[in-house]
Length: 317
Ligand code: PBG
Image (tube, rainbow, N blue to C red; front, side, top):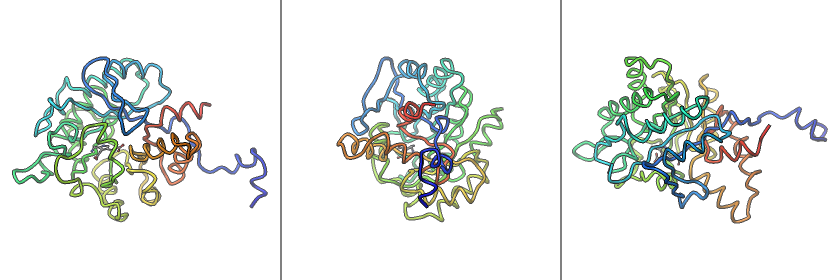
């Protein structure tokens, strides 16, 4: 085996997977108001920012795509998450600002209610406190329509309601947004690795958990089945989330579909790498690039990671 590993040139020739800066999507948390830059305590070097600061950052960024998360102030939340569908809400103004500053950037928006509801669940609640699947579909479809009308290239529903892809696709077709793509958080697991995100997005459920809608981390078959249903419903992209703990799911889904797949290196994975690097236990650049390469090797076409901007600098070519 060592004959093919003798020199850098030989090793490069036989290299299978690699990363390009076009592979990365940067998630950003957006708060209302102006000149707000609030560091997220559990995610060192990540901040929530207002639209004006986002705009400045986008003017200089090397990344080719962003995934926008709205983080309303708690006084703007209600039971029904009504801020999520406002035309003058946080995400509509963020989409406009990003597109105005950099029309070349691919804008993807998260479509979910958890940051907008007082109870922190990803959908509406029934009288008895259960998450109402079919009632939620209408809100998600409306939210996607608002994002599409402001110029989002891709809407990314993450609520894990059954039928959400079909509901959104139908709404987009009916309102004339035939070119807006849908990226389904198809294989989204009920993971403890979302902890820091819920801190950043202030979206932790106020009671219970998300296990009645997100997939059990024990279940690979069920995850592939869920993703293939989303393909049938009209998804343009599928996603596996979190990333590294679910490489087997990613590899299996790669074989089961011809759609492009995104892998989401989530907040907890980011925090593990960041804290280990800060403690001197890992070389940050090498470790992060290795995780990205491994996600590509397992079958990801694109990678969503809070390290996207660092990676684009590190691999400059
Ligand atoms: C919203 C949503 C979550 C994440 C992305 N979209 C949190 C959750 O489901 O609780 C997590 C992303 C991350 O941890 O980086 N439903």
